[in-house]
Length: 116
Image 1 (cartoon, rainbow, N blue to C red):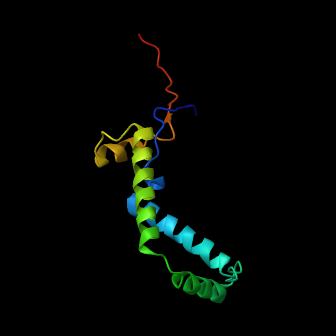
Image 2 (cartoon, one colour):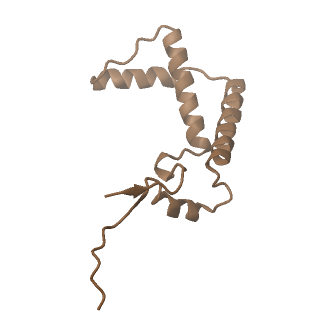
Image 3 (cartoon, rainbow, N blue to C red):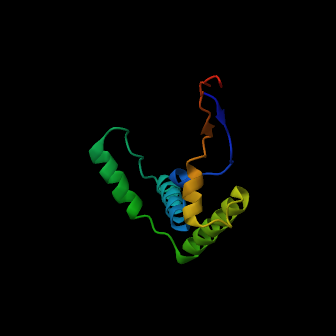
C-alpha cells in the first residue's frame, strides 16, 4: 500500500512538555555527576543493582542555580520544537487529530466498477 507523507510534525507519542524535558535533563545531570564522583554504574539485568543505582542517583545534589539552568533549557527546547513543528498555532485537540497523519495516509486500492 502506498503512503503519502502529509505533515512533518511530531505527534503526541514522542511529545515532551517542559516538565518532561526538565526531568530528562535533570536525570542526565545526575548520571553524569554520579559517574564523575565514582559511583559504579548499574549492571544490566540486575534488579538489585538497578535499585542501588537509583538510590545513588537520588542522593546526587543539584543546586538551585543548576535547576534554574535546566528550567531555562527546557523552556527553550519547548519553544524551539513549537517553532520548528509549525503547529504552535493549533490547539492540542487539533494536534492530536494531526498525529493520525504523522506517518502518512494510506492510499486505498479501489476497484472501479465499469459504468453503464
